[in-house]
Image (tube, rainbow, N blue to C red; front, side, top):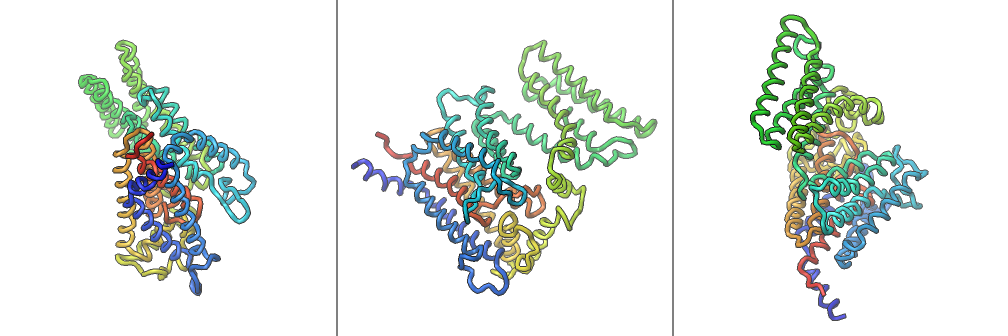
Length: 489
């Protein structure tokens, strides 16, 4: 009993109060933004529980209480029961798929009387705990493909359940875990492959119907196939250490492409994509030959990268037009500039850009925003709440909010790096990756830079589920960090 009495003050002294201060500051600015976004001319009491701003006070108060409870628990609880917490949230996600209540086309909400909860928000911290537990176990090595595949499965499983709930935006958040994988030793080639796939998709779809010069050749297909050849050639140099083979691949691909491009322009116009495909087939054969001859696995990985790149590119158009939901397809087309649709899918982004731009340098002042008060921006107190910051607080206020988030991310990196055990470090990087993804994508979609996928801005967007979920994420990590110097009996 004496040990328990002496232990608690040490925990309180070890807490990172800078992070707690940032948390409280973000909560305060978030509440001000909710007030601005939900206020209607003529309202007399913004503190009334019948208003969104009043209800947000309840969510904030309960979040602070939850944070206090999480800090009072033994930090070893989260390590010990990580798998059990993960299994419980997986079961809840699975049951939510069959939820009879559909809200805005999604079955991701559980309705319990007046209370609505979104299990996907809580599954983030549960997944972070489970993957941290697994990756910190004895003998785990991320370079063993079986170990990496198992860790990836822990992340992908809740994603599949959330997609089945028709909540694609929340599912995409789990891609942020790959930043943690990269920090823990995942080969950079995996991260590069993901970035390359995004680039293939954007360039291929955006310029698919644009012709190259005077030839019947799609610029999108031409550029993507040429990049596949260049990337594969460079990877031979990086991972196989052969400059000679790299020069051979690049000179052959670029030389042949140039010759046939000139032939198509000045002699007989034809689709050069067919030449590009033949070069890709020859490149695949070349890599296969050297893999069989030398038994070096890098050749096999580059071969798979080349095949996968081509397969992904040619399947991207099918996925866009036949797999994605109509509203998702329209949003991507609007983002890529293929459709304008200012009265439809592009309406939200267009109105949010107007609201942010109208704020100018210093903003219009608290509760004085016209775009938001007249409800021109849909979801302006949830997914698009950052436009309220821009209109009422201006560029300076928006920059101040982003600086607060930057300080939080930098602080979380510092806390993660000082953890004495892998479990704490891995969980910490999961937390900061999730926060970074949410901030980048949410602010990006409000500014029209990223697709509108409907994810909240941490501590700003109205609602209890997201606020509680982010509080769980952050305060569990703060409790783990606070226990780093405790003496264990």
